[in-house]
Image 1 (tube, rainbow, N blue to C red):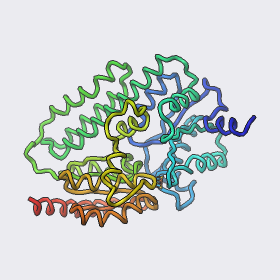
Image 2 (cartoon, protein in one colour):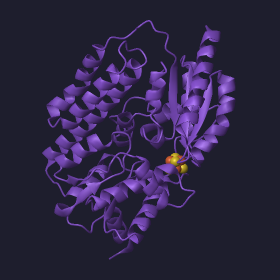
Image 3 (tube, rainbow, N blue to C red):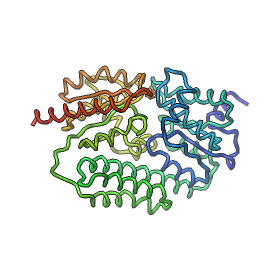
Image 4 (cartoon, protein in one colour):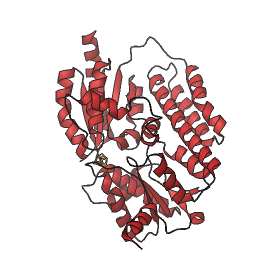
Length: 383
Ligand code: SF4
C-alpha cells in the first residue's frame, strides 16, 4: 500500500468494521448533545464519557507528561473513560497553528496504545475540513450512504447547537436579573434535557423560538444596574464548566451579566459552512479587525480573539473583561502579556486567570469578587 494511502487510512481510522464501531469523543461544553444526535441519525453507536471531574483530571494527570496543557489531560481522561465503557473509535478535533493542539492526537494515540487499548482514531482537521471533508469523515466512521439520514443528522445537530447557544445566552442575561433565585438555571436545565431528547427535525427547528419564549416568562428586574463582563480566552476552558470552575454561574450569582465570546454553534457554523453561504463577519474576522493595532496576525489558539474581543468590548460599552486560560497555554501567555497595554489604552478593566489542576476555588472566587468591585467602581466613575 502506498504511504499516502496508508496515512490516509490511519487518519480516517479504518481498521474496525463500521457495524462494530462504538464512537466516543472528548467532552467540551455540551457538544455531546448535538454530536450524539448526528451520529445516532447516521446509525452509529456512541459512548459519552462522564462529565469532567476530579476523578477524570486525576486519570489525565497520571497518564500525561507534566508540562502538557490542561485540556489535553482532560481529553485523554475522557478517552480512557470512554474506552473503559466499551468505545473502540475515538474522534478527535484537530487544528493547525503554533500551539500544541496539533500534537494532541498523535500523543493521545501513542499513550493509549502503550496502555494496551485497541481502537481507531478519526481526526477532524477543523480548519481544513469544510463540509465535504466533514461528510467524508462521518462516512468513514458510519459507512452511512443514506442522504436522508445525513440531512436529518446535520439538521438535528445544527439546530441543537443553536438551541443550546440561545439557552446559554438567555441564562447569562437572566441569571443576574431574576427575582426568584434559581429560575433561570431551572429553565436552562429543563431545555437542555428537551434539546437532548428531541428527535424530529421539525421539532428541533422550533427549539430556539420556544426557548426564547420560555425565558421571557421568568420575572426579572429590568431596571437593575447590571455590569456586563466579557468572558474571553482559550476555547476549551471557556466551554468546560469543570475547568473554569463554573465561572459563568459564579459571576451571574454576583449580579454580573456574562457574555461569553465563543459559542459552539457560531464557531461550528463558521468552520463548516461553505464560505458562499456564510455571509456575516465571523468572530475570527472581527477579532483580526479589532486587534490590528496590537497584533498583526494570528499566532495559534485564540490569542488574536482575546485581543480583538478586548478592543471590541471597550468600544461597545462593556464594563470589564475576564480572560481565562490553562496554565502554560502558549497563545494565551502571549495575549496575557499584551492585555495590560490594551486595557490601559482602551480604558477597560481586564483580569487574567490562569487555571490548572492546583487552582483552589476559594482564592479564585476572591480574585473574581475583587475584580467585580473594581468593575463596578469603574462603571460609576465613567457615569
Ligand atoms: S490553545 Fe493553549 S491550551 Fe489549547 S491546545 Fe493550544 S496550547 Fe494547549
